[in-house]
Every structure is written in C-alpha cells, then in structure tokens.
Image (cartoon, rainbow, N blue to C red; front, side, top):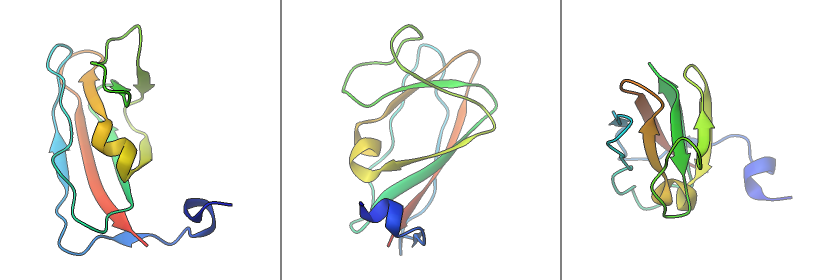
Length: 101
C-alpha cells in the first residue's frame, strides 16, 4: 500500500501559497514551481470544465483528461509538475494548494 492511501492526513506545505490558473481553450497553463517538501497538490475546477495532460503534450479536447467544474482532484507533485491545462470553453479557473505529510 502506498503512503498516499495509508496516510490520509496530509497537511498544507509550510511556506506555500495557493496558485490560481485561468486557462482558456487556446491558452494552456501550468503550475508555477512548488515548495520543497510538497508531496501532493489538491485543486478544484471552477467556472468551466478543463482538459489536462501530464505526459508533456499540449492538451486538446480529443486527447486529454477531462476535469469537471465543481469537482476537486489531487495529484502527486511529480504529476502536477507535468500537468498542463486548457479550458473546455470560456475560461476555466483552477485553484490549487500544496500538501505534505
């Protein structure tokens, strides 16, 4: 069992500030660098659905993970470093916080 499943009590990373992305359908955005010690990133999608890739490619609606507005997601810091987002339509708001154990 990995530590992210067995340790469900993550806490905010000391010194980290939240990040807010506002990608559009044709303007991909990524997270800024994270604090040392961050293990996971929790984020929610506001305003408009979004598409995300974590393989280094630019997301497009036909080949990306669809993330739905109103839902929260968590990624390992390694996946979050590689994540790139676009909005499904309009402008999406992605609000993220850094967590550690």
